[in-house]
Every structure is written in C-alpha cells, then in structure tokens.
Amino acid sequence: MQSKQQFFVRCRKIVKELVEESFSELKDKRIVCFYFPKYFGAVAFSFNISSYVFIGFTKRALLSNFSSKSLIGLLAHELSHMNRFSKMSFIGKCKLIFGYYFSNKISSNEEAETDRYIIKLGYASKRYALARHSEKGKSKEVLAKSQERGYMSSEEIKNYAKSINKW
Image (cartoon, rainbow, N blue to C red; front, side, top):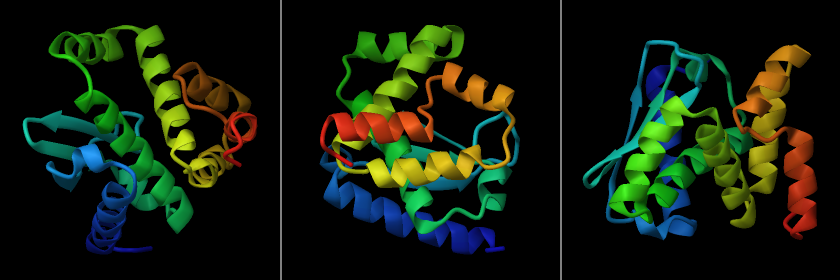
C-alpha cells in the first residue's frame, strides 16, 4: 500500500496534467488535495472557496489502491464538478450547494451530468475504470444505491460513450 504522501504526490501530478489538458477554466485556481479522515460514504469530494479548489480524500480513497486510469477518472470527475461550478451564476451556485445536500434529484442530476461531461471530454475509459474498480465486490443493493445517487455504472458509461462516439 502506498503512503499518504505518495498518494498525494500522484494526485497533484495528475491534477496538474488534467487542468492543463482539459480544465483550463481552473488554471487560475489554487488546487489543494487533502486528507479527510472522517468517513461519510464518499471516496472523494470537492468544493471551491474564492480562488481555491479543494479536493478531499477519505481514508477509503487511500485504501482503495486505484490504478492510474481509475485515479485519473476520479480526479477528472472532481475537477469536472468544480469546472461546472465555476461557470454558474451566484444563484445557480446557491441552488446547487443547498440542493445537493437536501434533494436527491439535484444531487443525482449533478453526478450524472458530471460523468457525462468528462466522457464528452474524452475520459470515458478512465471513468469506466473507476466504475469497474468501485463495482468490484459490491452487492446489487449497494450498486443500486450508487446509481440512485446519479453515478453511472460501468455499462452506462460504456453505452453513453459509444452513443456519442467517445469510446
């Protein structure tokens, strides 16, 4: 297993490359990756304050032993949230922030739109690798809950990518 330091060195390198390649709207932001020891169901999460973008990783992320492809998929997903967020009006941001935590419909829509966005950018195989990694060993009930929250399954990712010629 890699150390926290090794994990974050990997993440910072990948984030820098992703911003250069696909998320130019975030070039002027200071992107901070950090460890969040509390477990609340997520592997990673992101938020924005002024000129900073924060990407937090839970203990589950550090224990997941992500392949390079799946880690790129995870980071592209989180950067996509911030990229989409940066384009919203103040009212749009408020609606998303409050809606994400109080409305399953808004949060599941945000997750699905984020996945579709990174697939359009050309990260289908990376998001697919992350989905396959996440699906490993999970019960049908757990997988169904993940899809209810808007996360696309590996099959949905593949089918959507094929439908828009990004596979």
